[in-house]
Image 1 (cartoon, rainbow, N blue to C red):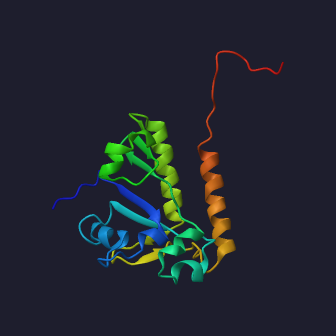
Image 2 (tube, one colour):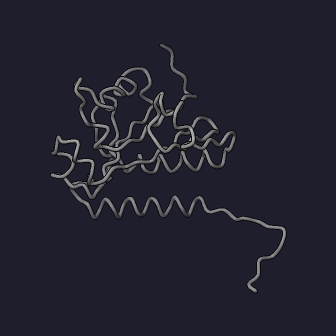
Image 3 (cartoon, rainbow, N blue to C red):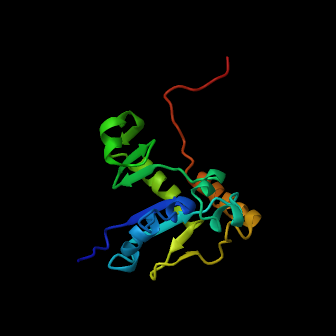
Length: 180
């Protein structure tokens, strides 16, 4: 299999859902692991966002699917080149045939694609990332959400403030706005 440096893939999912084991002993983590551990190490980022409010006992240590009721990262945004697909449900065959009203497609919209990609990178930075050996770990200097809730929230808040600041735009109009 050949690789290309032009390819970039970032998958960001919820930690609790992405590590949930199904009846076949598989999870999103195990199904995507080969992307990171085989040929695409440099081009692939796999992030698993752990809601800091789920805590260690309510989240990571629980094997029950009910652990997800305490908080799930549920952003359904897909960026392909300069195109953005925002959905309201998981991507599946029935979604594209029976529930098409729940998606918006923005074609050739580079500013929106860059905005969405940048947001995904910020959130992935503040998530557990899969390393080249397939293990999940926080990036260096990032607090573990369930171990240091306050520091994690402060770090995430700092990154999101910087993100918002860096993406402010000026909207120009042909007429002056005035209060009447």
